[in-house]
Length: 131
Image (spheres, rainbow, N blue to C red):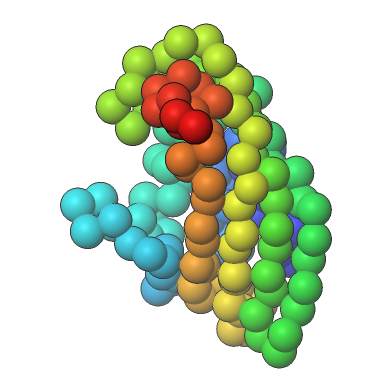
């Protein structure tokens, strides 16, 4: 079931993505200014795959512990539009992400996530890392 989350992003399928989520799904950590729930997750998917038209989530590892599934993936794509307030420089990124999906009654109830945006913004030319 967790694989379908990544398939939905790779195929830009908002209907599939929303069908995986419990009505009260929580995105953690939540952005206090722009919380994302089941209704808003489709907008997030559209935004991300518009900014990065070739956006891809490649699953590297899947581990399960009870009702939680941990996924290590690589997110990649070329930036075509502004992202996080940064204009596009036409560069690509490839970053690691780790998600923990909690399931109940066949639906994802919570997703904890962490992405390496420092590396991504550096690769996109927005935050050059100095030695």
